[in-house]
Amino acid sequence: MDQKRIITFLKEKIKAYIKYNYFDKDQKFQTIISSQSNPKLSKLRHKVHKLLNAKFGIKLRKQRCHDVEPVFA
Image (tube, rainbow, N blue to C red; front, side, top):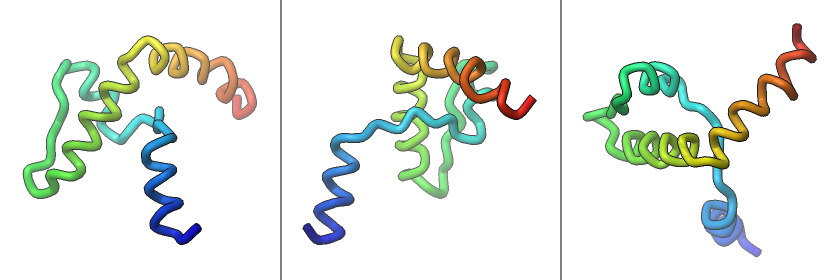
């Protein structure tokens, strides 16, 4: 497979449940800070915000504090 086909396949099959920089701030004010200069970034933020606030996304966010944080504490 060439690189473009692999990237396309991964984009379609893998969902990223990773918080972006302003996620916590967006949660606090219940609005998504959008970028006027970069519409792609704004679109990605909306997509990730939706994933992280779905049932499975909330479950993953709650689980992280039990899985990762004790290792570094």
